[in-house]
Each structure stands twice: as structure tokens, then as C-alpha cells.
Length: 221
Image (cartoon, rainbow, N blue to C red; front, side):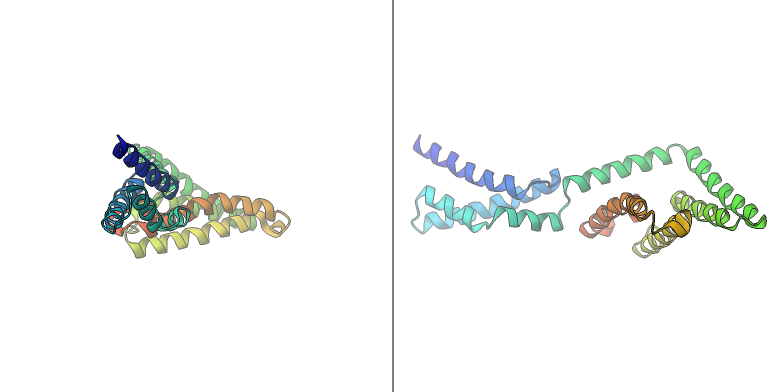
């Protein structure tokens, strides 16, 4: 009975440490951490008991040997997928499948991009230069987003080049849209960029953590 209580106390101490250390991690990441940490814990606890420590003391020493749980959590989140990143991966796969399963959607959007560029050319010929450039930039951004499946972007270098061109086109479009009043409407410009930059920052973190061989196609974009 006493041994059972001691084991339960040891498990509680380790579980409390693991709960803090795996906070905000994805399920697979949490399972990986728990497996590795439990192994380290058991080795440290066994070593302490062989050194003459009591069961309770061995538990405290083993948990202490793991270090600070909050510090470990920060380190794990730098190298392992978080729950938010795992959710983005799932959502990205769903979005890609939804578009790929309905080929007409891609063609409608590509036609819309071509129409925007064509309209921009017409307005340019008529002297509406600012409107023409806005249509050009908008058409290019839309075209880049939905022409990606037809482009050689599914390599590390190809994806990097594609993302760079897309950002240049998007910033150009926003700059043309706001025009000379860009400074006046800087708060709105920042809001627009933040909505795009935040998920892109998350995707960059996922690319850093996953081997290229495990990247889904949408992660190259």
C-alpha cells in the first residue's frame, strides 16, 4: 500500500512537470516529449535510488534533474510543432484539397486574374494610369496565388523565389491602392499586412521545424 502511494506521488510530480513542459504543443509533439522525458526520468530516479535515496527523494531528484518546466517548454516550442502550427497544417491541406477537387475554381480565379490584367491594359491606354497599375498588381497577385500548381515552385529554392515575388507584388498592390495617402492610412496598411504576415510567420516556423521531405505542397507557397 505504501509503495502504491509513493508511486502515485512520483507519477504526480512527473505529470505536473510534463503538463507545463508540453503546454501548447501539438499532440504528436506532446507524445514525443512525454516518451523521451519519462525515459530520462526513470533512469535518473533509478540512479538516485541506487545511490541510497528514498523513493520520495529519488522522485524529487529525478524531476529536478529535468530542469525548469517553463524553460523546457520554450525550448520545445522552438523545435517542435505547436498546436496552432499543427492546426494550420490541417487547414492548409483542407483548403488545397477543396480547390484541387474543384478544378473550375482555379480556372475561374485565373480567368479573373487575366481579366484584371487585360482591364489594366485598357485603362492604361485610356490614360487612367493609377487605376491601371492597381488592376495590374491585383491581377498579378491573384494569378500568382492560383497559378502556383502550374509553376515549378515545389522545391526549397522554387518556393523561396515564389514567396519573394508574391510579397513584392502584394506590397506593390497595397502601395498603389493607398497611393499618396499611404502615410495617412498607415494604420489600415499595417492591419492589411499583419493579416497576411502573421500566418506567413507561422508557416515559416513550420518550414524550419519540418524536414523538406515532409512538407505538404501548400507549405512551399
